[in-house]
Length: 124
Image: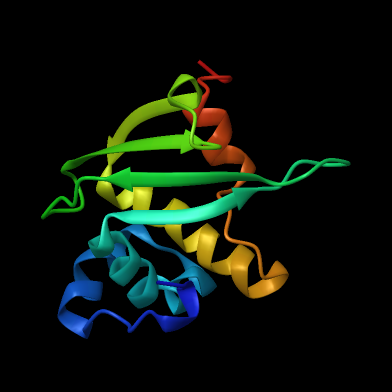
């Protein structure tokens, strides 16, 4: 399933996350929740001056914004290139909003730089 085929989540589902999402990001919220409920995303990590690296991200779907979501991401179909992180579901939804925004701007399904910094624990 592509991002373009996503149907927005209903208003009741979106309203639970509204306090955690600011400004224009709210426009993407119903679609990010719909993507979140799928529990999987395939995309390509943009690498400058090189081929994009395919990835598959999967996660558990939590009920409440404060519940933890465990996200696993594997690059290039290689088990040695698998990473995992846990965060509150509202935080992960915000990263999915960035995925939606990035796709709208560049037609590339990829997470943001801050997501990868968190995934690789660069700022810890």
